[in-house]
Amino acid sequence: MTGSSDVRHFDIFAGFYDLFMPKADPDVLSRGLALAEHEGTTGLDVGGGTGRAARAIPDMDWTVVDASGGMLAEAAAAGIPGVRGDAARLPVVDESVEAVTIVDALHHIGRSREAIAEAVRVLAPGGVLVIREFDPTTIRGRALVAGEHLIGFDSTFFGPDELAGMLDDAGLQVSVPERGFGYTVAGVKPQ
Image (cartoon, rainbow, N blue to C red):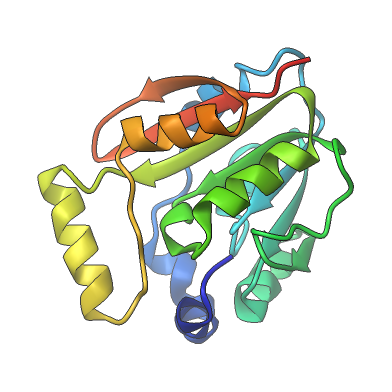
């Protein structure tokens, strides 16, 4: 999921992570997933840590990919299968999943554009990439950026329009179904 400096933090806090992070909102994720050209049954939760996003949408067959062994152990304890891996080199076959989510994690991925390209590679035609992030231009976003850097995270945040441009550059049909401090950008892979 993350650069090596961030992985260390997640390994340390894995056992407590779900106590401090709010649950992923199934309605928000469902709005993004509904943009796919067909109903999906398989999903990849990239940088999914403990499987928060996967647990929010239980009617899909999810696999979490994360660089933190501690976070993957928590996902496994919650019944979500996981694979240790790098978001910029996903250990997944081309066009093999109908949905990819990156929820509250892209800012921790050191090579964001490569991670997006990998998500596009593994998506089946008509499948959807849903990214949930924090807008660094909002008041709460600026506080989050400062807080993460203060505790030593090597985070890079993108605003919704910048992120939408990155998905467009990767060849997806892009929409921004939600804006605000927490925002969602989704992209559908053309058939």
